[in-house]
Length: 374
Ligand SMILES: *[C@@H]1O[C@H](CO)[C@@H](O)[C@H](O)[C@H]1NC(C)=O
Ligand SMILES: *[C@@H]1O[C@H](CO)[C@@H](O)[C@H](O)[C@H]1NC(C)=O
Ligand SMILES: *[C@@H]1O[C@H](CO)[C@@H](O)[C@H](O)[C@H]1NC(C)=O
Ligand SMILES: *[C@@H]1O[C@H](CO)[C@@H](O)[C@H](O)[C@H]1NC(C)=O
Image 1: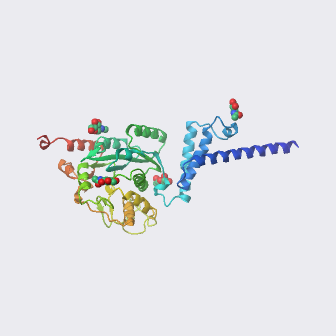
Image 2: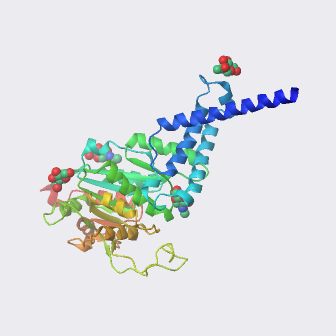
Image 3: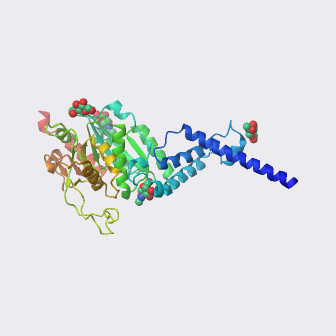
């Protein structure tokens, strides 16, 4: 008799606990933003589990008993868990393919910045979370130009997740930097060289969803010199198309690298054809801002591979657009060799060696010359 009673009470308690879990997770899911993918669904479920943890008062103590107290450590564990689980689901429920931006969401965002600034040109800089030196050099040089030839220009940086052993501290620093400068966007993918295609597609997604009103955009690497006067002259030229336009350093007939030791290696499984479609070298390419939405849409049908610029080329081809050669192709230069001020006055963009070099060159290029003083 006593055994049966104990068993019955245990059963009752278990049933109660189970319904409590179901009730709370259901409730939280209803108030959450409609999930875009199964992946976000899973993340939301984990978040709602965490929300149960987060309400230690006001609800019955049984529920609290189920979950650990919300100490920062527990918070971190839940975050790590959500990342782990999202990795697992990537294999089975990834939306389109791993690089499609619908699989990711923004942790740091500036959703209103385009309606506030109404930019003509947006400069989007993919950069690693720890590269604060590169960001600051850009902020004090070309990233600090807010009006060029009377047109509004805006510079934003895009990073992925902070990694490594002190990832939490790095995240705090990033959030502080974001509060200070209001120019950081962060998405929840693993930030690595291999994942540059994801980064670029997230940039395209941000432009398409947060900034459709801009006229032109540029994807420009963090180790680039940029001459905005020359870029603006190109964009405002009467012959420059306002739509379906993308230009930069054009790469024709590039063979796919099959050498496994190369950092540009792509397997035949990821990309079977021996050559890439015509594309623009990733260091810096400029496009009319109707393209991001079209590229994100085309990307649904183009399997991802890890060469971001060639991948954008494949999407652009799918849209039915041919990359344009710039009016003066020598203005998009990989390397200029030894420093010569005249070269930097003439180019639109070129690779430079370090953040210090960018600051040095910028000062020298901007210094008043005898002609300016007259
Ligand atoms: C939960 O337990 C605490 C003390 O442990 C008590 O003060 C509180 O009233 C309890 N809450 C409920 C809803 O029973
Ligand atoms: C940006 O330029 C303004 C002047 O237009 C200057 O006052 C400011 O210090 C510059 N910012 C940086 C980070 O160099
Ligand atoms: C690329 O990012 C995805 C999504 O965050 C992640 O699952 C994967 O491990 C990353 N790959 C590399 C090589 O960093
Ligand atoms: C920029 O785009 C807006 C529409 O979004 C258009 O009204 C405006 O004329 C464009 N500006 C230039 C200089 O092309």
